[in-house]
Image 1: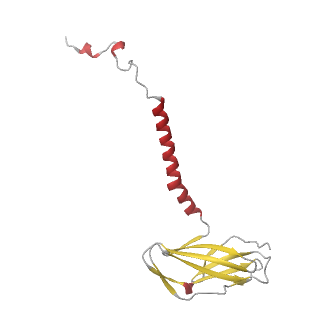
Image 2: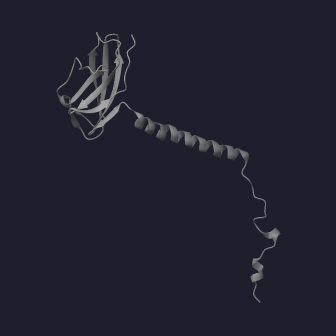
Image 3: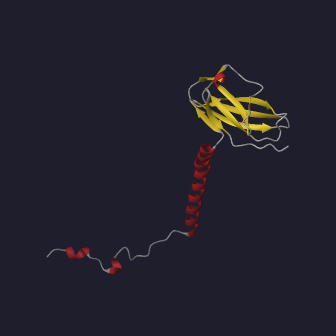
Length: 165
């Protein structure tokens, strides 16, 4: 007969019945804290900036450029800030194709006091700050919104802004 009966071990000889050495509580705490730290790091470095970039409702993309729109109000004036960024190869931005206006609730539209009609070279990953000023002496308490057009096509309309002075 062969010795194939030697392959069957008695229960006390099996490895699975031996008491396993459990990791210490210190290592469990260290591993748990490192996993939490990794999740927090991923959240703040990857997830949060990506969601903020997607949720920006005051940002418009056009061709190789992105335009962020912001505004500031004073007693008689409104200043619209346009931050124009180039996200690709160096390229010229044509200001003559861009127009910004304020549209009031009564459908009256006013244009800025200062405009540009030139082209300017914007390098890759660089930007330009373009400030437009509007005078609101007679229309102090009427709501309005900002409209941005490029090549006579509406590319952005803000939410209604209420003036309370």
